[in-house]
Each structure stands twice: as C-alpha cells, then as structure tokens.
Image (cartoon, rainbow, N blue to C red; front, side, top):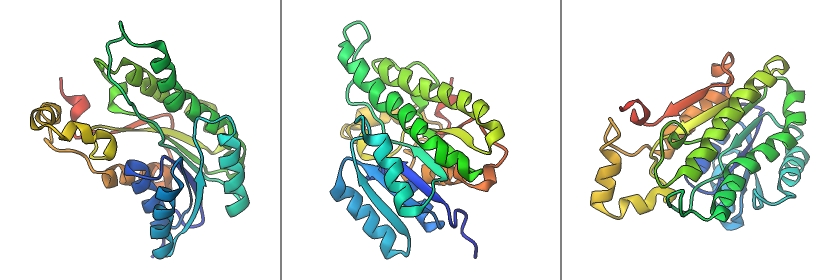
Length: 253
C-alpha cells in the first residue's frame, strides 16, 4: 500500500512533544524523511528513536528556533541529510504568561512575537528556495483558535497567531504559480504539556471545556491528521486557507 508522503522530506519545528511530535511521527509513518527541530536534543532523540524503530528516517536538529543562525542551520542540515525539502511545518511557538494589555511589559509582547511570528517568517525565507525547487511544496503554519476571536489576558499570543494566519494568506497568493501551497492549521484546546496547567483545577478545566461544543480536549494525533491532509496531495487545490480543528469552539457564539 502506497504511503501518502513517500519520498518527500519534511521539517517539523517544535517536534519534541505534543502536536509537533504527533505530526512528525505520522509524517514518518507515511513515508516522509523528517527533520526534527527543537531545543531539547534528549527529547528529540527519543522521538527519532521511535521513528527509526518503526522503519522511518529522522534527523535531529537541536536548536533554538529564535536564534539568528537557526534558519540556515535547519535548512542546511536537512538538505545535507536528505537532498531536498518539500514540507515545512512551523509548529514551534507558545505562550508563557497571561496579563492584561494595560499592565503587560512590552518585553513580554516582543518575546511572544519573536517566538510565534518572527521565527516562522525567518524559517520560511530560508526554506523557500529548496521548497520551490521541488515544485510541489507545502508550508503549514500552526496558528491557534486565539487568532479567531478575542483573547482576554492573552492579547499578545492572539495577535501573534492572527498575524500567522494573515501571513499564510499572503504567502498562498505569492506562491500560487510556483507549485507551493501555504496553509494555516488552527487548533483549539489540545491536551498537551502546554495546556496542562488548565487541567490542574477541575473548575478551570470545566470553564475551558464549557465553550467547546464537543465537551472534550482535542488530541495531538487529531491535529496531526489535519496536518497530513495539508501536506499531502489530498489538499492539492488548497492554499492561503485556515483549517480549524477546535471541536466547534470558534463556531460557538
């Protein structure tokens, strides 16, 4: 049976845990060579070991995605190992604090933008030449449901992720004639380490899930399946779009 991504090469940032790990593992199972990017070499080695054990090909690139040298290191190492680049998944990101805009330190705003937006832009710029050369590339930028509605106490994160959606729309138009597609993947509340603090208190968890029509957390594997769709030829006539996977949260008035 043919595998969906057979012979293609993917870079997945934030691949050491959660959504990124699930995406990388699924892509490898579907035949892709996968470059795993994160700061934690030990965690990446664990992901790579699982991929290799199942017959896949994985490259570990332990680097801080916000570092100046990161984009060239990631792209260069991937090309050296696998000879090409077809799929880029900009998954690395996150939010480390909550604060009202009025009292938020601007340094916190800037740090959030660098991690969630600036690093994505810089890696895309570094990767575009080899992706375009392949003629059938796919860029997947992971945003957040916070980009689609007001996010009290997380205006910094919502603004960064909304910018990712806008960036993706513009990129889809710019690359349309070059055989490269760009789409945003927009998860809702997913059960990962990053949302673990919301599950430490029953009342807080109930408050979060009360807004989700399906009344449950999403699973990283469910987001990975959506990423596989965007990476594969199944979405060959789709670009500049946002695929929302949030259990109905954004549809809730």
